[in-house]
Length: 404
Length: 236
Ligand SMILES: Nc1ncnc2c1ncn2[C@@H]1O[C@H](COP(=O)(O)OP(=O)(O)OP(=O)(O)O)[C@@H](O)[C@H]1O
Ligand SMILES: [Mg+2]
Image 1 (cartoon, rainbow over the protein chains, first blue to last red):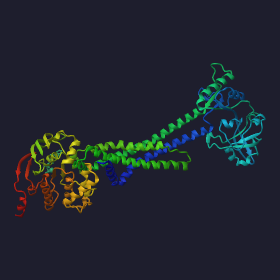
Image 2 (cartoon, protein in one colour; image 1 turned 60 degrees about the vertical axis):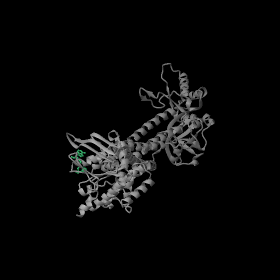
Image 3 (cartoon, helix red, strand yellow; image 1 turned 180 degrees about the horizontal axis):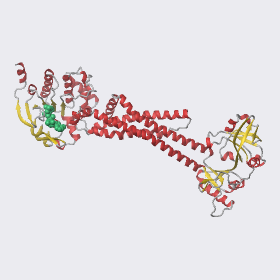
Image 4 (tube, chains in turn purple, red; image 1 turned 180 degrees about the vertical axis):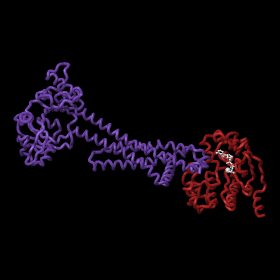
């Protein structure tokens, strides 16, 4: 029997029982749509996390004072005062493979412009910070070497601070008060589009010398940002920096480091593996509903085989071979799951898009997840269709003919 | 040629076993037309199902044109049914959702005949049985006699050499019954072997031989020299 005709006969039998076919398909539709939407949410979260980190630059090493972990307890950042501007200069001069170094101090401050005020972080740093941290100027310019040397009272304002102060490019050349100290705004920063704990838009950049003398009142550096030329050299540069700082800090052979180096690439990998697990978990839960849909197909196919026992007997008397009966029922269950799968794909994609529009969380519908969900639905159709189809094909012709 | 030698068939359901056939030996030559008669439960249908390869005997030897049926696999039996045998049932057994034409096409579809050939032959056959104007009717739109003629057309689809009919007139009135028998008679003259089961004497008289069965055994075989004797009897 030609395949095409078998398919036509199968479809005819499915359309003969429209309501039942539709309800059976619904299980698969929901399953496939859920798998696609859940994976889209997981991958959206992944993308959000990685793009926030990529905003910092993945070739970035960040050195901070103190041990990250001591006896399982994280030490407060800047709780130790072991890093200095000289350390930063030494790294720049002595470590190979480094493309830029920017020491950074920071403090929280209250900022006033005209009649608006807001709280933000003040970053004291050097001109190289712009290239090392991918911070681009939107209007005006970044701080210069001269301004660092002269401890000038100048500030570059982040985009979120601008919004909070109700200001635009018109703020350029104007004065703002940082903890009541007047600064002249020389530039604004482009938004990095990230928000939440990773936000780099809610900050004001001033010369490091100014920050130390007027705001933090200390010579210690909170972070040394190191841009590595090639991402492949991250580990090697990290090791060199460790050696250099240990020597400079005169640490004994068996002493712990008095600083911590964080590797952006590593952080990103860790976070994306977390969101990866999250994605698998969501997809896995959704797959269960697809499996349940498959059981629905098996249930209906079994009912259908019983109902059509007589028909099967007649077909056998007319010379139908086992595989012809088997194919007929397999095609029916695959048509149910395949069609359900297609509708599920459409609903899954539309649902992901709507979630992004309505709930504002990023979703990413990957072609691979669509393929996966669809082929899984077909597989479910095959798997749960086999038993009823085998049952039909193995019926004894006489017993089937006698069935009423 | 069909030959049965000492055929036995035992049905065992749980502890009880029924001997439906006990040592039946029978030879059916080509172009023969035989009727099987006997009381209810005597094993007529069982015998016919074995002849039609729908069932296999529990003992004895059954050969079709020299091939021992017991050695065939299920698919090979299906092949024999498809190519060599046409079935006609008491309750027609047409597929209710298909039209007369589609019902007749079905055995050809299963045998892999292409659409054009299939439709052409189905139309021819339905015309032969006098239903050329009922091609697109569904079974419930046809009378019993008409349905049985569709079933006969279907049985002829793959040009079998033997037609097996289990009480083909059992569900029909005597008028339609005779019409159906005329069709069988015609087919027999065209060269087909016909085996039919009946309870009615006047139907059996269309046959060359009548096999009388009782308790799963052949009681006697009656040779009929003059066909259509029933016409005379009926007019009496
Ligand atoms: N599948 C079966 N399982 C058990 N016993 C069966 C089965 N089929 C038939 N029999 C038994 O075999 C015997 C012969 O049955 P069969 O159907 O051949 O009779 P029959 O001569 O065709 O009767 P009828 O004229 O009523 O159709 C009966 O006693 C019946 O009960
Ligand atoms: Mg019977």
